[in-house]
Every structure is written in structure tokens, then in C-alpha cells.
Length: 222
Ligand code: DC
Image (tube, rainbow, N blue to C red):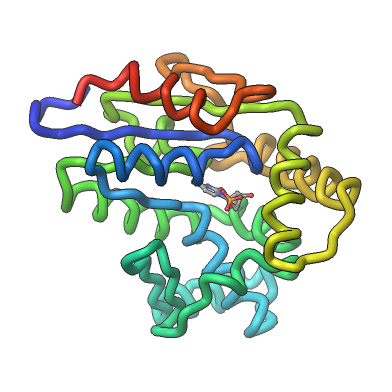
């Protein structure tokens, strides 16, 4: 349980395409909370591994890379890898394909969880979203939500986002990629995607963005 009453920590977990980022960003604005997209951090590390062509089984090289790599989330949710703005590149298909296998590596998770917990400790009011926020990163969060939606709906949402960025994957291609990531993210041994018992489950299939935001806001006493 959170002991400090001033603290307002909100955890949002769920699979890819469930709408966590857009919803969490809106809630952060409305309630004046810091927002942290932890998936962006896994994506930035994945991009570095891709660029350096590192072997995922070579833990020594991965450890050295982690020691010498800076991942920062700036204002407007811009993501910096060793000072370079990689906000757009981390959403591209070469990162989508590799990010779930990278997220299975305990060494990577340990470093990122430590960074995320440090960021949470530095502020009293935060909303963080990912896969293991309620279970591992902020198990003491006052509010926990688990957002889900049907695979078809999640694929449609992702497809719409990608079309806006001129990415050309078909709807079937997006669905297959999301399904593959769900399977890896839910079955890995280290902090898999799970709905913790104290999280409020919201199935967003067929709900508008505003409805999802309202469902969450009405439960938060801030
Ligand atoms: O939320 P996203 O789709 O940007 O996340 C990308 C990947 O990062 C996701 O497939 C699994 C991993 N991830 C994780 O393992 N733990 C988190 N807290 C956030 C993301």
C-alpha cells in the first residue's frame, strides 16, 4: 500500500494496441501526472541492439552495452538514445519485430525496472504504462488498471496509427505481429504480462477513447 497520502501513482498494463498510451497521456494531462511509457524504453534498447547487431544470447556484450547506453524520455514524450532523438524510429517494423525477444532478457528488464522505479520515486504523481507496472515496477500503486480489447480491434487501431505515419503493413500483417508479441510477452518467465488481482479490468472493445478515459478518471480520487 502507498503510505504517503500525497502520492498518486497509477499503473496501466495490457497488451499491444489496447490503447494504453493515448489513454494514459490524456489522463496525465487532466490530472497533472507525470507520464511514463515504459515500452518506449524497451524499444530504445532494442534499437541499440539492432544497430550494433548484438547477439541476444551474449549477456556479457549486452551488459557492457547497457552500462554505456543512455535512454532518456524528454518533454513531449520524446525518446533519446545516447542523446539522439529516436522517437520515430522506435515505432518502426525492425524494432517491432525484435522488441519482445529483447524484453524477455532478465538483464535488460532489471536495468529498465530500476530506472523506472527511480523515476517513480522522484515524483509524487505519476501514471506509468507497460506490461509489468502493477506487478513489478509499482506494486504499491494506489490505482491499477488492465486495458484489453479484441485482437481485431487492437490491430485496427495500430493499423490506423501506422497509416498516419505512412507505414504500409496490411491489417492482417499488423494482427499477426501483435499476436506474436502478445504470445511472447505473456509467456516469458520474467514478469510476463498478467492482470494482477487488484487491477481494474477494462475491455475497451467497442468503447470510444473518451469512454475509456472517463471509466478510469471516475475511479481516481486525486
Ligand atoms: O507498449 P509497447 O508496445 O510499446 O511495448 C513494446 C514491447 O516492450 C512489448 O511488446 C513488451 C515490452 N514491454 C515490457 O516487456 N514491459 C513493459 N513494462 C513495457 C513494454
